[in-house]
Image 1 (cartoon, rainbow, N blue to C red):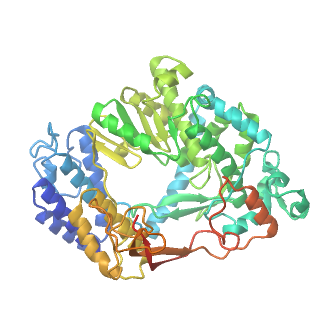
Image 2 (image 1 turned 90 degrees about the vertical axis):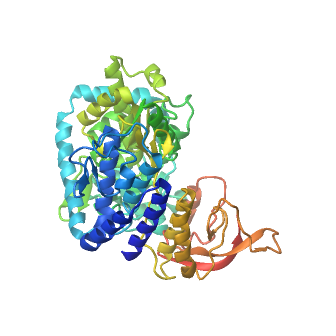
Image 3 (image 1 turned 180 degrees about the horizontal axis):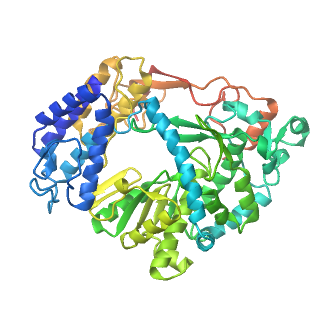
Length: 604
């Protein structure tokens, strides 16, 4: 923890110089409370301070119950007071007419820097997250009972207007077996990894009408024995998803549902086609083109910046968004397209194995971990947004209405952009359908907006740089070194050069003196500089500038595939380029060991 405290002190002193204030008392407070409270002060208490700060910006006033646990003088806390009094009035706590942007950034940077560091939660917090998963499931069942038939009909109609053209294409693709399934790199409930996934033998009977084993798991019918050896599972015998926790913040972990291999296989087939049609298509294919995203988050950030200037756009964030999408709602979404509806339902896991609670039947459509979770939740949110807008205006959801709000509505996962004059209606409608709006991360009153990692105040970027891992202490801490190099370069680009140079001094001995100045595109661990690159020699064969730097080396675990599995993998390869990894048939999956090697590499 000492290294984190030193980093915080360095960043605080640099930001104090930016804002012409002193942080001597703030540093003493951080050291004293960290020694008393442990790492949780840096990773939990300070981010809570940031939430109150952002809420105060939203309300244009520091509330009396804000900044709990910190001493106050007048209307503001003493901690980080030198920055806060450049944003709020010291006596009244009211927002100044012209708050200092650098001070807003400074408060957020110093309180959020360790907010998402990858440190495992305590067992008690992990248990609390699992219990929350079960509680959410119970609340979802209650919500299903409150959603009326009329609400389902309006939702289904809105989805037909918004996504009907895309669903027509998908429905036809499923009926003609035109979709291409695939495997991801992650874990599976049946613990198949790497190339072993291409030799899967289990196949749910529910998938047969839409993804027949012979069409989707045989390279061709010469390998009929593979079909004979398959295990076809009745619904009651299907594997449940395996619910696990992964690090998110020290306060609470993220809940992931690890899907069975075969379910993920089918989900990928639908998801890749669906996401491509929704995000990449022109208006000729989809009326929502440009309003929904799965890969490109920059449009959300640009709209958030616009909203921070004009006040006309609000940014909303949802709590437990994935786990609150009801399967009954999803059935309504796809019901007019029987083949598509059947395929989506057939690739959905119906049960979950939850630690401490056994195997439960799921009311939700899917948790994070399903390849369809992200696109389906985004479509549900977009439909509900337009239902709310239509009801507010007294109009049905039509293409004309969608076109009217094309540049003021956008959805990326659970990050929503909506018109400010519609925000109360949208929130009310989302909650009526069982979702919860996170008031701490939703903004529409003041000049602060936040969406998809882009944070803005009055058009100015106040996004922070986060330290994702504890700082390395030796050359063998490879993942920590790689993370620290990335953090250093982001701090430099953010203008925090003094802190970046302090990190350089820590990294140089860990990298044994080899930490050259090179471009972002260089494959080695290097320093970015606005002053340009510094070559160390020229390649005699390629005649290009080179530097000597550490290169990250990772080796996928050994994972062999059968002949028919290899052939199936080849047939399902996307794109016309060859597979880059020459060992992909003998090694596959996420690397378990990462190392760094000293090499001569291009400077750019």
